[in-house]
Length: 261
Ligand code: DC
Image (cartoon, rainbow, N blue to C red):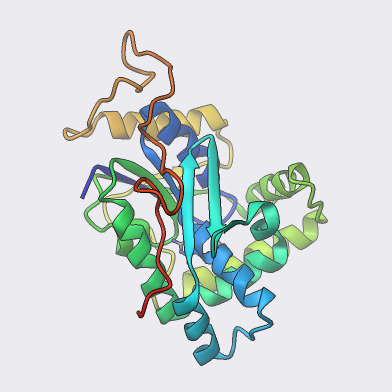
């Protein structure tokens, strides 16, 4: 396994912004694990499958190809060979992703995909169970948290920016509902991983969040300093091949074949 940095935490704690920036600055791969659950949720929704029909969800999970590609600054999510864009960011898909994420066959399948990624090079991954279940041997584990109002404000702003305006109270209620489900499920609940650096981002600037994580990573004895680490003296800022997950279907691409199992 390569050098892995995990960032877990509830929705809206700042995981995506932080993980993406840390990956970009270090030239690491960026892995948005929530996007895999979201892409599957989009498929289930498009297929008119009830999340309560466990057998149908399991079948759909087996038959679906989900993949990530691109770089931290331009990450792409693929569903059966088509880019999904912001269709996976709607409140309906968020809710459905959280419901499906409580089902073990879904988790097993998506965890397999996440583990394969760690063979491709150093990475920063964000999610709920990364430091506890997916990458228990990760070099650096971070847990980002923030109070519900701060998280709801950020999420509402983010949705607005994506052209999906949602009233603040609805965003807050959705986050609270998802948190409860993500923390309370039997399989891989959201937990603070042992040994994790816990950062409460309620009153932190984005830059301070990013710096907190970068400091922990750089302090690790196995940290593979790269020429793209902008913190290093004299480091160039050019974009190399490094840190790109490639396109699905190419050797650099990541994903899962529909395959037999
Ligand atoms: O991080 P996100 O909001 O995009 O994740 C969407 C849902 O996916 C989240 O409510 C729970 C689930 N999820 C998970 O169970 N485990 C992960 N590692 C990532 C996401």
